Amino acid sequence: MITFTENKSSTINTYNNTNNNNNNNNNTTTKKKLLKNILILLFLFSLINLILLKKINFNFKNNQQYHKKYYHNNINNKNDNDNNNDNNDIDSNSFVKKKIIDSFDYSSFSNSNSLIDNNMEGIKKVFWPSVYFKKQGDVLPIEWNKCTLTKLGIDTNSKSIGYAHIELDSENGKLILSPTSQNYDKDIYSYSRDNSYESDVNKIKKKLDQKVIIAHAKSCPFHELEISNSIIHKDLQIEKQLYPPVKVGVGVLVEDSDNQRILITKRAETLRIFPGVWVLPGGHMEQSETIFETGLRELEEEVGIDKSMVDLDSLKVIGIFESSYPILLAHDKLPGDHHIVIFISVKLNNNNGNNNEKSPVNLKLQEEEVQIGAWVSKSLMVKIMDGISTEYDLFNNLKGDNTNNNNNDIKRQTHLKKNKEESIEVVYPINSKNEQEKLRGDQVMDMFFKGTDNIAIGTIYILKQYLNSDD
Image (tube, rainbow, N blue to C red; front, side, top):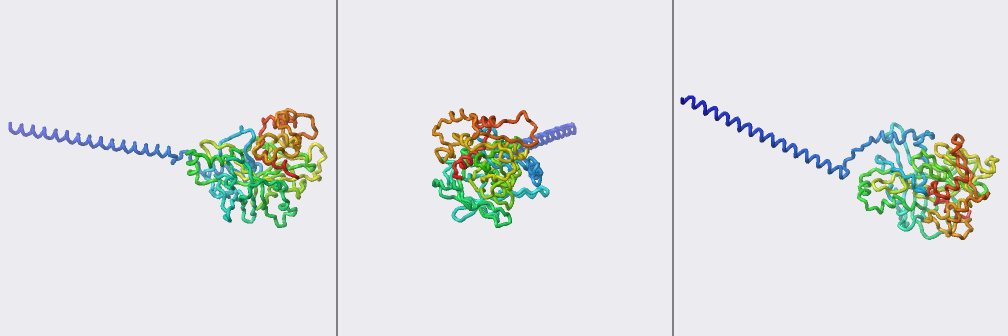
């Protein structure tokens, strides 16, 4: 009996010990699971916090592939649309603001004002010259996200136009802007010929160095960005450590030999920025070019007017424009393109070999970039410009406008009068096939007056200044 009792007690003790061990193991497992869950929750909380603070971006794009797509064949292939788009991104802000697109993502560009991308399997894109700001002897690169007019000391809260001193240092690849007197200067419209084009390009190239009129759009996104209190805009600028360059373009105002008509062109609908907008011919500067060389090259490429058709002595700089695209500042994006556009003017000579009395020269439009060309009489252009973008009016009336009636509606109602001196001659690319869709001059005129076709604000600005000149 004693033996039996001892065995029974031993069995009970063993059972109790096993139970205790199981309970301890269960408690340990529960604690481990709880700790694991806590760690997972902490990780998820941290991840969500980083996403909300925009420290993690799940829309990562491989820089090399991204650049290869953007710059595909953009060198030495003038027929490539991407290259054509970049070569013509020089005008700004359409009169009728209906062609707004999302800004371009330049997240992998260099902070330098000259852009050289060497990570593209031998493809290299260079924007030249770099844009600099000079004040009190210091010459520093202009920041891409800063308003140029504000930098020059112009009161951009109340004005969209002013004066600047411009200098092109070709040897060092610098376009230098500096502040100058903002006092009203009527003499600026005389446009000194000290910087006229050298007929022999092998001669020493004269350096641009003069006072000019400068302007930007009333809704300039870079000015709006500077005064914005948006946390999103501030965060985007902090995150965007690498900025694209401020690019330099040249626009050319061409006048016929009789001083009666001005050439404007309508951009192709396929271009990346300002598609279908009326502008002056032009494009980006290329390395070591003078401003006039760029203008003459672009003129020949886009509309077929070569150097032999123009009066080289008539070349002069008539103004500059700070251009931006998109034309408005989005609430959640930075602007995409920032340009300094230098406008020059030139007159045709009488040796163009064209016997057509309607058109002063046989245009050959580059279809990839230009869908329509139009010779517009100066007297008609005065009426088109009158009453729009009045922030650029430095005079009560444009030159040539002898009417004292300020009722623009009356002027616009009478614009279709059969007047030989007020006409538009329309030109299309040689290979244009849509004959039924081709517009007549009077139809184009009607669209201008009704505001149903876009004229770039930079073009409006420079036309207003040119129509006020004494030449």
